[in-house]
Image 1 (tube, rainbow, N blue to C red):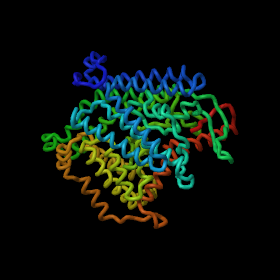
Image 2 (image 1 turned 60 degrees about the vertical axis):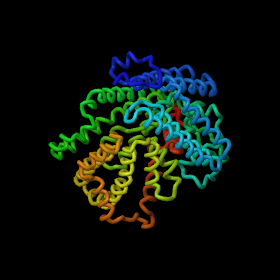
Image 3 (image 1 turned 30 degrees about the vertical axis):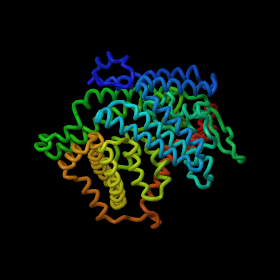
Image 4 (image 1 turned 120 degrees about the vertical axis):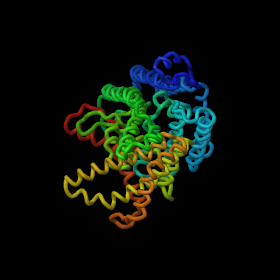
Amino acid sequence: MATTSTTGSTLLQPLSNAVQLPIDQVNFVVCQLFALLAAIWFRTYLHSSKTSSFIRHVVATLLGLYLALFCFGWYALHFLVQSGISYCIMVIIGVENMHKYCFVFALGYLTVCQISRVYIFDYGQYSADFSGPMMIITQKITSLACEIHDGMFRKDEELTPSQRGLAVRRMPSLLEYLSYNCNFMGILAGPLCSYKDYITFIEGRSYHVAQSGENGKEEMQCERAEPSPNMAVIQKLLVCGLSLFFHLTVSRTLPVEYNIDERFQATASWPTKVVYLYVSILAARPKYYFAWTLADAINNAAGFGFRGYDKNGAARWDLISNLRIQQIEMSTSFKMFVDNWNIQTALWLKRVCYERVSLSPTIQTFILSAIWHGVYPGYYLTFFLGVVVTLAARVMRNNFRHHFIKTPQLKLLYDIITWVVTQVAVSYMVLPFVLLSIKPSFMFYSHWYYCLHIASILVLLLLPLKKTQRGKKTHEDVQLSRSKKFDEGENSLGQNSFSTANNVCCQNQEVASGHSSLKQ
């Protein structure tokens, strides 16, 4: 296993052999640890108060390209090609339609690379390949194109509050564009961030609060001392350590593939099958917890990711966090699980697809998610089932939830039942995502008699599709409304950053001044 070939550097091959892990995975982890140290150095010695934005952009970009070259060799050129051509499209096409052309090109280029990687190089291997970073770059390219389109072409009254807050009012320079796409903090594992937040961080305006005045210009409201990210970084590194330990120990003893073992399926009882399905998928998640939390810690270590202060005055470093582990594991609905898993990708899907299409936005969003993830058939089986499960879960909630919230005892019973159903349903749904191929996926489905497929379809056919209180909105409208509230609330990367920080800052001024706040 440790002798797996890599397109990147083989300098760490002895370490790969020692820990019995593929060389590309070792390269990835070591480069991320190097990025963590570089982030601390970047915040200490290249702080915005000590050097210019130009230098910060140049250093962040060069370090990012070096890490990409170390991990992926000359395949890292794909990052520059995809970014460079997209930038040319933005400049040549113009702001009216560039978001459409950039979307088609970036997603198409990513798909071509994924096809070549999967069907030419290493089908079925969970290697840290160059298409992974390209997925994040594709998100950034399409997000920025939409934000420029919103800021330079559409009228403010046509925009949602979150779109207005994220809108970019000028075309970025080539250096700014490359720095945003390829900086060392996020080139290997992301997460996605808005262009406006990134530029604000580079220019050193992340710890100030700005608010639009009567003249439409941003006016400084208040300042605080710059908060330290050290405690947030340490906490996230502890989560990384626990996740890595869990993955290297427990996960290896609970292989997901055992769910389709013929002998296990023939001899095990149904409770045993259900428990093993849940536990094996649970054991597969820590590797994502490790990668995403480490990526978040790297950005925080550089000083990026501050999102204001909570009601107790504590600094919040979750601006670009990609997951909330506790909420994921305690999810009592499919929506709650999705809202807390891969948060930035969910926001990207909403902003570039769900809010911008008029026909079946839920279905189109799931299709885009499947295409973006890659070309393995298991991805499409998971996401197409996800459409049906999402609609069925919505109908079930609308028909039954109000019966169980009348007393605390009934609410507790409802939460327990929905937690069990949600965790088992999610495990059933994502198993093909892990198995990748069609044959093992349908083997699993047949062993389980397609129970979730059938149950979801029966729910949609037999239960009434309740209207909203106004009786006019469809369920798609309701979902969009909820999605907007979600975006403008806990997980907003744009306008909410203004309002949250401003509110906190004003509250603290009344009590005691002397702290600083956030401008996003």
